[in-house]
Image (cartoon, rainbow, N blue to C red; front, side, top):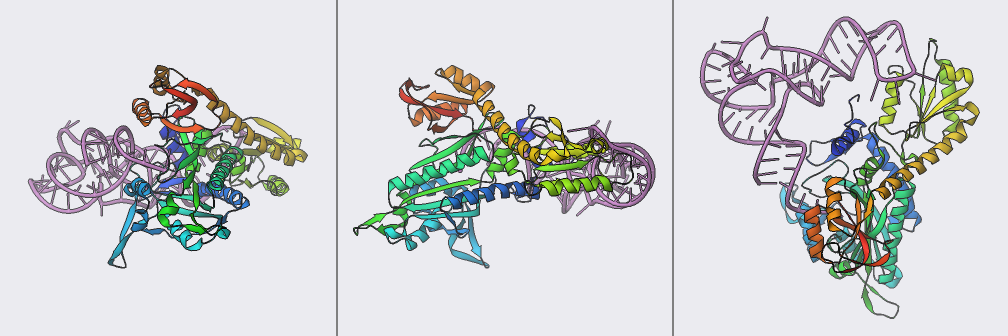
Length: 476
RNA sequence: CGGGGCGUAGCGCAGCUUGGUCAGCGCGCAUGCUUCGGGAGCAUGAGGUCGGCGGUUCAAAUCCGCCCGCCCCGACCA
């Protein structure tokens, strides 16, 4: 617990791992590639999950639950899908001591099992739209894993909808993308770029994949959520049909979309520093920590009474805890709660009691401020909101100052090798250029951003015509 | 699956070259007292089949062989 965190500037990866381990968000498990999410980490995930769950329900969706196991044959029904996912599936071949007639895949995503059910449930245009979400664990046998960012098993939310028309499906898809992006900015304080994936990067089996992309403090991109317009690819493969008003049989138009425990990793890499976690107040399990400084008196009851009063006064508005344990020094506690990312610390000691005030210390900028007892409540609320906004602002400024508009491939290569960052450049749309750029710079097309202006330009590699700039970056 | 590194107390490590007071250190943990405005001090104490199996030897953490596991870099991959 008292170990030092590797400096972010020294080694970003190690810094990240140190934060996760030392703040007890997660631990390596005995199973390769799988992690244990510890109470501190799970509490953050619960805040993310509960908030998103509310937003998803408010936008008209219902939760349901489908099985963990999926018959192997289901996967083979959609050609692109099976090609994309087979290599990373865990397969159950035995059960109850016997070899199974048909192997079961542990779900790497649930399109195939859910749409098998949809084909049973959907008969008429009156059954549409179907708007279902599930919270689940899934397994992808990744070669290389990293805590929260890519683990063999992870937790996520996957929405699966079916609609009568292409337009409705497209609208749903974008609605969810906006929901994700609002969540990222308003709750996670992370600015994101919305856009569409290139053919190469899109989801296996989708017509189009949209995503939100964020910049981490090492200037690499992290995909924070995806929303797929599946078209009729799956409905044709799984025979999900409905009868229209005028009696025709038609395949439904579908979408699927998800975010995962990776968001916890995003939160860490976007805001945290060499002292530990920096959490946006809206997602911090504990928003305020009160720390007493005992002083010379033997009797601590006065100070404890005052702390209780403060706690009771603000606990309706914020989640507050006091650390009145006597075994650790104030200094130790300061460091401990900074490590855990508690946004606001309130210190109270003998001097403060004399003056009828307390000391506020912000986690995001370490600024100290004296606050009189009668002003605590309003100031807490104000400061937490201010922290929420300031870290978004800080992350936005960081991203903007590391986003470059290049027309010269040499500069592109240079920046990737030297500092990294987001490069907005023209691209002809050809996969061959995309591949070559990736090979030479390790940068991929993260997204073709919606808000990229129409402008005529030349592909940064081959010089062919292009109508807008797109986002290249090294990516997780 | 290729290249490199590592397995000794809960964690981090020293010891191995040259076999024999080498079962050790730091942190953490437990108990007690004194402390407390930025990671407290002292005292006492608990804790290890030295990754596993086999071999060499009077004697193996140390030398040899095989096996197992983990980490990093690549290949792979949302």
